Length: 258
Image 1 (cartoon, rainbow, N blue to C red):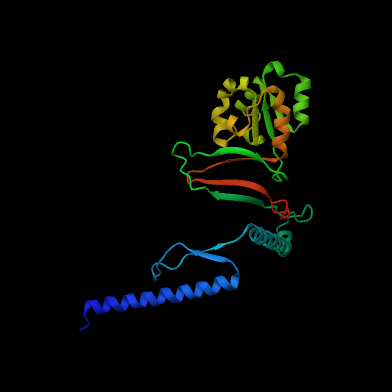
Image 2 (cartoon, one colour):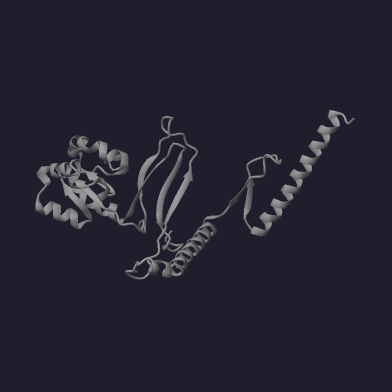
């Protein structure tokens, strides 16, 4: 009979040979692909296959992302053309040429933070030089003393879709203006106590004005604030895993814009 020690030695030898062969394969693959490869596990077995992660510099990552975006656009257009007869058989009439999807480019940053600990919850906003490529609908809450035709006209000309005071709050409360009708909300400091009536509606959607992201502004800065929001200000905050997700553009943007 073969002793247990010999069996264990044989098993270790097989695992060691498998690990060396796997490392050689991945080193060759990394040389062929031209990208660095990192491994997060120092041992390899049948139950624990090697984990590899490709590391790209920013230029190569943008180029690869743009190629994948164009590839998906071509596939969607080809699928639309291939299903022309099926749509006609169902009595569906095309109302125009195929309108392809313009994908959003999102940046994900792992900051290795724990938002549950004090001082590690990150939140803020920043302005992008070319915007986000998305039209932003802005609601502005101003006091009734400032709720005159000239002020409303100047704020709307800056890009706001809804402007008002108590009447705007009432319209949101009774559902006349749904919270899905705007993407950002600005307010003057004196309106914050009155917004408690709609906090349960605005809060879950991240629409509650907050000084940390620059959405609480004095009356003389409201117009500039609306212009900045309409031009493309990105709001960001860490999620429960310490990762920041932010949309930074569209697939139609050039690499230089991104």
